Structures are given as C-alpha cells and as structure tokens.
Length: 166
Image 1 (cartoon, helix red, strand yellow):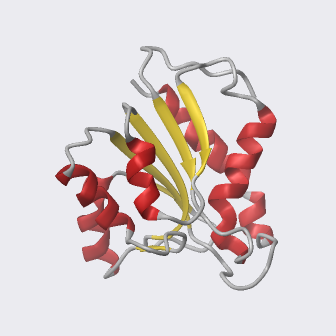
Image 2 (spheres, rainbow, N blue to C red):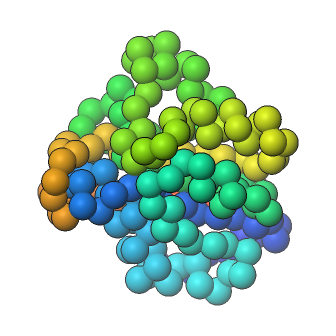
Image 3 (cartoon, one colour):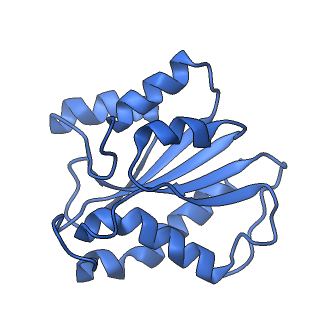
C-alpha cells in the first residue's frame, strides 16, 4: 500500500469500533490494527488512527477538532454477511426504512444514530463516513470469522478511498 496524504490539510480521524472478544464485533479494531501495522498514514500528521473501543459517548469527544471522520464498525444495513457498506449519517433514515433498522454491533452505551444526533446538537461540524461490514458471528471469540478476516484489505481500501475524497 502506498502512503496517503490528506490533500487539503484537513484533520481526518479514522476510528475503529468493536469488542475484540466478541468475534466479528471486533472488526473495526482489527482493521485499525492492520492500518497501524501497514503505516499507510504515518507520513501524514493530519490523519489520526484511533482504536475507539465500544463507547459511543467517547466518539463525541474523538470527533472534536476533526474536519472529517471515518468510522469502521460491524454494521447490519441489510447487506449480505461479509459485505461492506459505506454510508453517511444522512443515509441512516433511508437505510432504516429500507431494512427496517440499522444495527451497529459495537457501541454498547448509545446507538450510532444517537451519536450523530448528539454531534449535531453540540454543533460539532464533522463530515462523517461509516465503513460497515455485516458480521457473521457476534459472540464469545477472540477471532474474526474467515469471511470477515478476508475482507479486512477491502475495508482498508475503502478507508483509503474516503481519505482521498476531497
């Protein structure tokens, strides 16, 4: 992978969510670990790669001083197991209507859509993209399902593309 830089000096936070002891729920954290190992963003001081754990409330604090944020999480937006979906907070109502719900598996204290509403209420003007992958298994395990593990490079590619969007 090549080194990537934010072309207009905006501050970008790449945040992975999940619980690595709950199988595929840990995909966001595992993707962050792979991004950190690959060093693709290390030459750019404007990009911060963050292990977000499982707290949605903490996400609000992580978003401060960011122009853009890319969230990686286990998400069921109606796609097939292992499929990656990219969306913004503005798409959530549409996804909920189509699928009759949107499930983020990783945030245990507050729903993902509630986090976005809180950001609006607090007037934190960050542009957010979510890279979600539908988990196969969420339960006690420290390993990802093979289908999810296989798609980590595709998740990272999606993040790279989002970073390069102006």
